[in-house]
Every structure is written in structure tokens, then in C-alpha cells.
Image 1 (cartoon, rainbow, N blue to C red):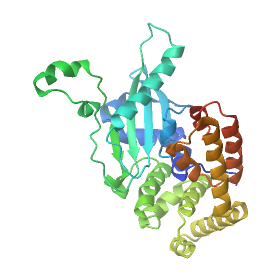
Image 2 (image 1 turned 180 degrees about the horizontal axis):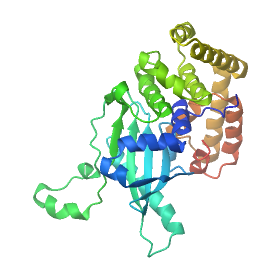
Image 3 (image 1 turned 90 degrees about the vertical axis):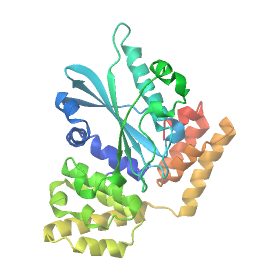
Image 4 (image 1 turned 180 degrees about the vertical axis):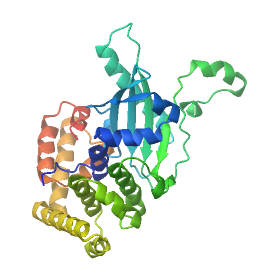
Length: 322
């Protein structure tokens, strides 16, 4: 069962699921406004191989960019996945910087008079508490009340769709079976509900591939659940064939983890070596990079990053390798 090293389990699960066009379509069709969804040529949906996340936030967010035809016009769908423990009151400002990067990349290959494509941003938030942040850039700008109506048209505007998993009941999460289970897992993890009925609905488990089931089990096992409780949960699966398939995969993944794992002390030494190399070469190691390193549990990956830290031209260049 070859599997690339986990950088951050949340990101890996989300990206592995929604990089699949069918799962992406099932997600966007349900969470875009109906009028926009009906205007999309879904056969044109294409994943773009780029990330626009600021290196300082590499440990707490990831993104996926899709190109498509919207009413026969080129456009982009931008999904930003937020799994930081606390919300960013200035999310709209950060999102604007990412959208500018997308347009700048487009402009570099499409000279004027070509127009910039529309970008539809969605922020998917995983945390355990609802956000209080309004999804509008306008709400972050302090305008004098007596001149607000005059000055407002001079300011940039941006509104994004905010999907907070904590606010959406499990049964209302929509999409393909694999997409639904992924969203349920991402919702359940910060709430300590990975063994709840929602994540073990047999009709959904039957409908996903072995590779998708493996990804979900990897995610559950990475949460460091009590193995005995996990096995008891698997034993409640009524279908014997599905129960056996799931138990066998779980046992294989646990054994694989034992064979490949190092002690936490050894991993910590690897991480310190990488951060120290960055401090020596560039004068500092930003907290975002430290958090990203803390999430890596593959020694070979850390060894590669140590060499990259020694050779890196800048902190930004190194962060792109995370």
C-alpha cells in the first residue's frame, strides 16, 4: 500500500479526496449558489497544480485551485482549507492576497488586453468553534460615517463563501460518498467524534474505493485513538465482508506505522536540526514553518528538508518545499 508521506493529515485527506474531479464537482455543485452552479460546464473542471498560501500559514491552511467554464467564460474556483484552532478576523484580507497571486500568475501568461478571469473563493473551516468573522473585506475597512457612501466605491471589495464544518450537521454534508466521508472526518476530528456513527455509515463505506477507505483509516489512526475502541467500533459494522475488509486494513496500517515509526525524541531531534539550519542560514525560523515541521512524522522527509534548509536561498523558497 504505497502512500506518500503525511505532511499534515488534514491537508492530505482533503487534497487526496477533492483533487478527484468527481469529488470536487460533487462538493462545488452543493456549495455554490444554485444559479452559479447551473451556469458551470462541469466537464471543463480542471485542477491547477499550484498553491498560493503564504509560507507563514503553511502549517494551518492549504488550497486547491480549479479552472472551468462559467457561462462559456474562463473562471476559477478557489478552495482554501483552514484548520487552525482559532479564526483569523482578517481572513478576507489574507484571501485577497491569494486572489491577487492567482491573477498575477494569469496576467503573466495572458498579456493585455486579455481580461482577468472571475475567481469564486470558498473557505472551508475545520475548527471546533463557530467563527464570528464576517466574510467581507468591506467590514474590515474603517470608513468615516459621514463620508462612507462616497469613499466605499474607492475601496476594493471581496466576499467569500464561508463553510464552517462545525455549523453543518453530519447528515447535511453533501457530495459524493467519498467527499461526504472526508467532510465528516474533518468535522469529527477536532470534536473528538471520529468513532461516532456519522463516520461509520455503512452505505457510504460500501460506496468508496479501497484506497479511499485506507485514507480515512490513516486519518483516524493518526488521531491517536484508543486502538481497542477503534476495533470495537469496526466490529459494529453489520456487513461481515465490509467489517473484515476494514479490520484488515486497520491492522495493516498499524503494523506499517510500527515498522516505519521512530521515537518522538528522535523525530524531535530531526525537526530541531532543520529549524536550526534555517536560523543559521537565514537568521530565523518562523513559527509557521516550525508548526509545519512538527506535523511531519516521516524521518526521510525531515532528512530531505534538512538538506533543503542548508541549501535554501530564502525562507520563502524553503517554505515552498513543505
